[in-house]
Every structure is written in C-alpha cells, then in structure tokens.
Length: 104
Image (tube, rainbow, N blue to C red):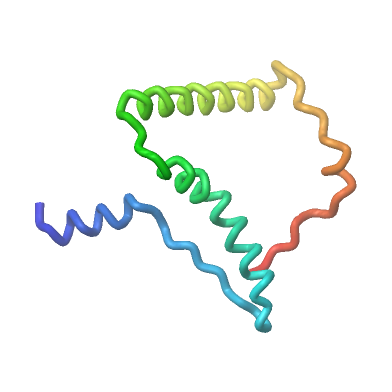
C-alpha cells in the first residue's frame, strides 16, 4: 500500500476537525459552542483517559465494559420504541427550560 494512502487513512481515523464560526466578534458564544462540540465528540473524556498509561489488559476490560453498556442501551431503546417497557418520565427541570439556541 502506498505511503500516501496509509497517511490518508491514519488522518481519517484520528477524527474529524471541529469548526466553530465566530459571529459579530462574540468569542464567548463561540467558545461555548466549541466546548459543547468537544464534549459531544468525547475529546475531554479521551484527554482524561490518556493522562496516565493504561495497561493493555485494563484497556481491554474498559472497552469490553463500554461495549456491554452500549449494547444494553441499544436494547433498552429498542424495547422502549416497541412498547415493551415504558419510556422514562421527562425531568421537570428539562420541561421548564427552553430548548438550546443553535449557532449556524
């Protein structure tokens, strides 16, 4: 495989670039949007995880646990959609708050 192809694959595996637009010199809002995007992408979780060395056995155990949690969540969501289990009640504070404002 050519080196250029290997480098291209490696760059796509690392992750996508986050981009935030600053409008009307409102840097504070742009920072909030950037922080929210980084939170959704899991950047902070990844940084925290990489602070110290993780043994391969610990990594496998952690990844196995994450996979089990994802599978359980997917099964729970499917059961809720099919009506086998009731959907969770909405939180009171979430019902009072207006939806998030989006910066496009």
